[in-house]
Structures are given as structure tokens and as C-alpha cells.
Amino acid sequence: MGRFYITTPIYYTNDAPHVGSAYSTVNADALARWHRLIGDETKFLTGTDEHGQKVADAAAKNDHSPADWVEQTSERFREAWRTLNISNDDFIRTTEQRHHESVQKFLSTIYENGYIYKDLYQGLYCVSCEDYYTTETAIDGKCPIHGRALIEMEEENWFFKLSAFEDRLLEYYDQHPGFVTPETKRNEALSFIKGGLRDISITRTSITWGVRVPWDDAHVFYVWYDALINYLTAIGYGRDDDEVQRWWPYSNHLIGKEIIRFHCVWWPAMCMAAGLEPPAHVHVHGWLLIGGQKLSKTMAAEGGVKLTDIAPVSLTNEFGVDPVRYYLLRETSLGNDGEFSLEGVTHRYNTDLANNLGNLVARVTTIVATKCDGVAPTPREDSALRGPAELAIVDSATAWNGFAPQSALESTWGLIGATNAYLEQHAPWKMEPGADLNAVMGDALEAIRLVAILTTPAMPKVCEEIWRRIGLTGSPCDEVFSSSSTWGQYRSDATIQKGEPLFPRMKSDQ
Ligand code: ME8
Image (tube, rainbow, N blue to C red; front, side, top):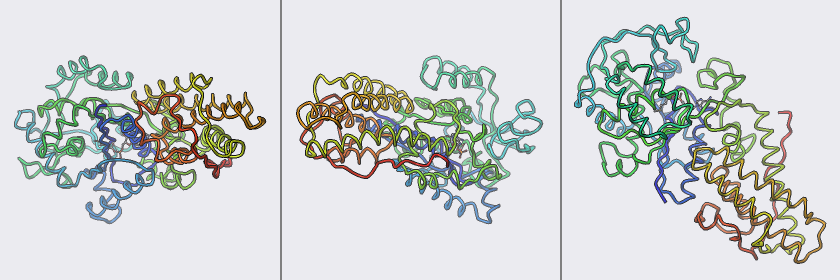
């Protein structure tokens, strides 16, 4: 048993969540659920990033004060996460007092350590990214990500001496080969550092919507400089050192690839400047694309996509909560880009869920109900399913531990496939009641029990229902994984429950 602290990016409250925000949150949720299942003491943090120009502009455009706007929008995120059955232990809002205090404490420490100084800033700014570009990194004067015109900025700002950390960062990467995963993203971060680091401006006088700089009243911190610190605020930075010591060495940030530089270059340097170790691990995932383009709030707001079609809540109304979670975890490897489409969701639903998992549970519970008087037979020690089951347990545990939900589910579906093939081979629907039939059904029930355990991080409600149908009490996540995940633990004599199809087939033309 260990400890596991996982975070999502905190989402900008410029607009409602979409399925891209749900992608990170559902993946982090499944990883948190996995770690709870294997007995790790787990903390899962998500929240909203409520300061900065982008949010202030969205509030003004909607005729709201920034405070009212972020209150409403942040609630839309919480609502979406409730709908998606997200099990976060904390939800941080950067406008909270606790966060302002941690930010001020953290940045005052960096200031006192001599890594912050005042200078004139001139540059090009993208409000959508809340990030700066140079004439070299801009494309025709426009943002390379959003294609929007960049704003010329000139201000007297406080700067962070990022340049002082080049060598220390390289050394840190060298000594911590697993700091950033996957490898391709680690290389990307390393090439930023090797390309040379420039000091960065970390305060603003042009806006007031932010955390006040404690040593200079005319400034607020630049939104990224406050946002990153949320990961420490939530574990008590500046308020409870023991809590920080307890969680920080076990920290895992799950982020999208467009924010690598902030998390894998700036953030570890900021931690070093404040006298802290960098976070333990950053895992970078790719983007969900629509028609090859990054699905984003900005894209939706600009009319490229109907936001209502891709809102997490609309998707769950159409497909159900667990199928949407399953799709987000299973379709794309957590590191690559993947194309999102409603046809894709329908296809996954019909093949993996209705035809494979749903069909397996329906077949087995129906046969046991009708031919074994509804009482579960005992699985065999030397069952032909034992090998595939043990393989699925080892492979999917390795994958869950390695931030690879897609591959964990693929391994689990290998066991579902093997069990369906085993049933085809023995055709228990043609067998007479008796010892041979009992043996086949006991084996199949045991395989289903193991599938429910391995799948519970992805589809907690469905797995609880499968657990109930195979006559077990509580839920698969109440079990102690190390002992429940071995072949032969199924409680024979359990009473099997038949039920409605777990996944009624969807028409594939939607
Ligand atoms: O960047 N595919 O907030 P944000 C996959 N506030 N993931 C996506 C996605 C897509 N199409 N679109 C968004 C910010 N995401 C900052 C973060 S953290 C200290 C501050 C996910 O609302 C992905 O995780 O723009 C991405 O990194 C995050 O949402 C960005 O959310």
C-alpha cells in the first residue's frame, strides 16, 4: 500500500465544460479509483482556474461581474463532474481565500530567495492561451494554437528568474527519468529547456482580477503563476506543513499536451525557487480532436462546433454515464491524440459494451437462472479460463499503474473475449443441467467477477450492478484487491439475478 495524489488541470471558467475537459477528469478519476482499489491512500484534486484576462473578458461579454461569472461557471464544472460520477476529494477554486494565501506565501518565499525582480515587459500576448509569443513563435502575428491576433503588451512587471534554473532542471530530469511521461512528451519538455530559458513576467498592472502581489499593491499575479500553485494550496501549503510533506512526494499531475511548458519547465523551477522538490510525476495526454482540430471552449464559442452536442451532460443523457466514461478511457491511449465523434461513441458502445460485456453477463445469468435454479456453481481450480484471467489481472494492473487505462481495459476485454469464446465452445445453452454445465457456469461467473473488479475504476455503477447480478454483496471496490483478484474466490451458492440488458443496443446511424 502506498500513497497517491492525483490532480487534473484546473479549468478556465471562461465557458462551460466540454468533452475535452471531461477527458482529463474522467481519466484522473479512473486512476484515483484504481489506486483506492489497490489500497493506496489517495487524494484526487480538480477545480477551476478563475483569474486572468480570458475569464475577465468572458464575464464582461456576458454582462457579469467576474465574481458572479466564475461562481456560475465553476458550478457548471461541479455539476458536470457530479453527473460523470467523479470521485474528487477536493474541488479548488482559485478565488478562494485559502488559495490567495498559499499563492502569496509561495511567491513571497521565491521573492525572498532572490528569484524575482522588476523590469519592463514588451511582447505579444494570446488571451486564449493566457500566454506570450515572440515574433519567432507566432505565425503571421497570430497565435499558433488559436489562430487569433496577438496583442502587443508593454508593462512594468515583476519577473521570475527562470533562466537561473536551466542546469538544475536538466539535472533533475536526468536523475528522475520518470518525471514526465510518456517519453515523447519528456523529450519535448527537455527540448524546451535545452533551447534556452528566458525569465518570465509574472505580474500584471493592466488587470485587477487576480491575486494581489503582497510586496507591490499595484500588481496582481499573472494567472498561470497563481494557477499552478493550486496543487499545493489543496494540500495545505503555508497552513499545514505536515500535510504538504504527506502528499507532495506522491504528486501526479495529469495534463493536456498544450500545457507541458508550464508544468514541466516553469512549475518544477518555481518549486525549486521556493525550496521545494518538484512534483513527483507529470503525465501528459493528447487532445480529442474534431475533424482534426483541438476541441476547445474557444473553438466552440467561435461557432465551429455546437457546444451542446459535446457537453458531457448531453452525452451522458444519450449514452449513459458509464458508457461515456468507458469511451473516454478506452478509445485513445493516454498520451496520443484521438478523433472524437458521436459515431465513434456509438460504435464502442455497441461492440465492447452491448455485444461483449453486456452479452456475457446476460448469457451467464440467464443460463444459471434457468438451468442451475439460480444458484451459482463453483469455479474449477484447473479451468481453461484461469490462464486468460491471470493474464488479464497482471496486464491490466500493470497498465493501470502505468497511467494506461486504454491498455488496462483492452487486457480486461481480452478476458471477456476469452469467456465468450469459452461459452461458444461449450454451448451451455444446449447442455443438460448437471455437473458439466455447473463446471462451465462456475468458471464463467468467476471470470465475470474478475472483470467487474478490473473494470470498476472505469464504470463503477455498471460494475456494482454486475456484482449484484452475480449474487455478491457490496461492490467490487469494497474488496481488498490483492486477495480478491486471484482465481477461485467466487462465492458459489450465491443467488444470481437476471435483469434488463445492461447496454441496450444503440442505432448506429446517430
Ligand atoms: O489550460 N482534448 O485550462 P483549460 C483533451 N487553466 N483534453 C482537453 C481538450 C481536448 N480537446 N481540451 C481541453 C487551462 N482539455 C489552465 C490550466 S493548470 C494549473 C491550469 C483538457 O480550461 C486538457 O487537460 O484550457 C487541458 O490541458 C485542459 O483541459 C485545459 O483546460
